[in-house]
Image (cartoon, helix red, strand yellow):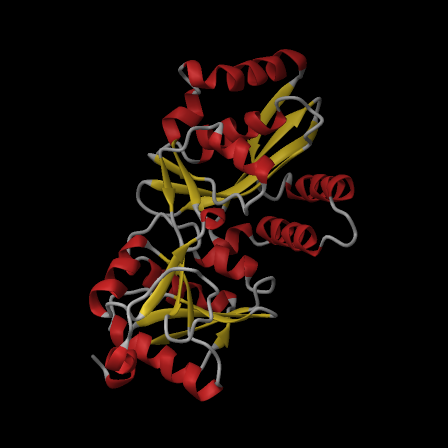
Length: 319
């Protein structure tokens, strides 16, 4: 297997394979892969008609579950052979529930599979985020009404006329919110900056919120499937009451009006972020799992597994 760095020139190839399998997973996006490639040290290959990403970190090497209409079992065997040659544990990430069913059906007892609540995407009805109708959204409507009453405000799509102002706002947000030693937060700022700089190349849409003539919030996202829009980036000055719920609502109204669902990505296990995302009442969660060979016991999970016997070699032999 030969892996290569993700470049803008790979957009057509990667997107064409992503489009073969309908998924509301926010990671099934070229823009997401390109924006986060340095943070997660990600590269990719296409084997047996299947797209495979590799991520290398201090925690080890992991491979995305193969995506596409090619030979899934052959692609999994190639990953296993590669791990044997490199002397590394076999680890998969980004499994869907359908992928879990496939592994359990085709390789019963061979894999240890666990799903991470921290990695699950929140998916909402677009209509609810636009109207905030009903008792459950009473607090959100109050925040927005107060914002509208307190400010001379406007919404605008992001383009060359206001991109620099959004970048300046992001820099100010960084000064207010990022500790020097917080590498994760600084990488997030880098991703946000690149989403603005390369918006057109990545096929993204952006929206900005002004108050008293100054940009105080912006969002960036894209249409993921025929019915789902994903919000990749959202930044606002939290000291301005209502800024976050206002950009949340206005961005969906203006940039995702033809979509049924809005994916607002995961909460990374952050308690405050989880509370905020739950307060918008998701209609579904896109679960994402991890897998390793049960015999290798490398994933650290506590699940019980059946004895493998000869089945531990089934991937190698082509079953």
